[in-house]
Image (cartoon, rainbow, N blue to C red):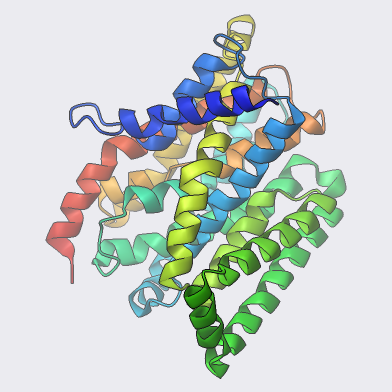
Length: 379
């Protein structure tokens, strides 16, 4: 990779925010970055090579940071969130149970033998998409209180379950890797809680702020990359490492200054690199030679939306139910890991990402309606 290519990535990344500005056809920033990635990548002008090792490594850092920020935005310490844990967990379980026969049915219909993978995709939610979409929504609104733990539980559970579903023959190693990352996250949480409780975190924060040292950011990145190394060594996606570290930081109490630094680092550079890379890695031309993959992608996306709407039958407002179908991290990891392990059929990885785009489009459509529900149901 050259500086000219890096400048191009940053430049096209600007289209994400620009496309999110118009009121009439406002697109989520993520969608804009994906679209420009598609234009300059394998599908379009081929100005960027997603297989470039530097580009892909920067994208992987971005993926870990996106999940870190998503985890840190989960209001773990919010008492209102804990109050909705029971209902949210029950809804996540119901969706997970329903996703199994649906995923197996789709695999049988398309004769791929990947019913377990499809079930995980259908059951998953994406905190990295849902939480930014609800940035201005009160976390104390009744339906949001119940929905946030549902998304967090589904996201975490599917992140852990994905490697097991991808390659059952390596389930033991994948489970060990996931447990190792989660255990490290628990140790991190306890260590951070001790720092906060003993007053040492406050003193470190004061010194860091006075002398412009960014100690908390440096420490957070060190821990994140260390857990990402553990995840990579055990063939677990770095998204689990990022999400676990984010949850630990949120549970201990994320300093406001650290949150701003993370936002600048992630949204200012690494997240656009990741989403542009993701768009550049898609080869939509491949779908023309495998038209069944188009149908598979649409079916996966629609199936996810329908399954996530089931709780609406029991009283969950349909826009809130629909927004939980948002997928990103799990399909990306499924496509990347499945391709690297040579487990997927031609066009299947692109189909998974196409299905994710269907759910992202639904999320963009229903997000304004969730805001209106929040205004009426805030407690």
